[in-house]
Length: 131
Image (cartoon, rainbow, N blue to C red; front, side, top):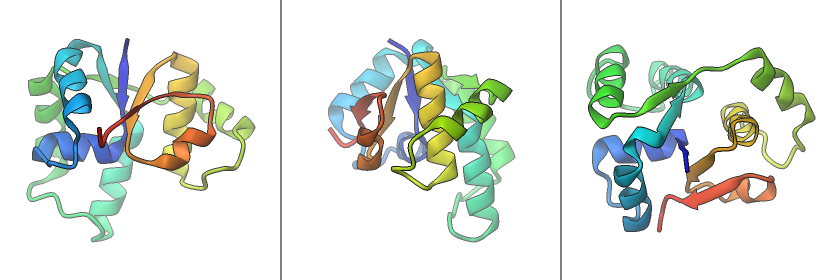
């Protein structure tokens, strides 16, 4: 099973946040070689931190590559196939970052680790990040 961390889950993992549940934390740790982080999350964090809606403590270009490498996580790039597939996604969720993560999980047959209940409206495998 390959896990795709949504942006919030990635941030919780990095911070050691207790909101990341023990089952999700164990699965991420156990599957580290099979965990991917989408370029979408890097994009989302960059936009939100630049806008002042997210505080990182250190520059994104410093911690993101180091955090991914030290955790053994892979990177899932955004392809044209992913971008185009968003057009066919039902509009249950308006967040463009999440919509792209959902499409990536569907097309790449990944299990997305998220605390966002809106993901449940889509045909995608989910591991609840809170459990």
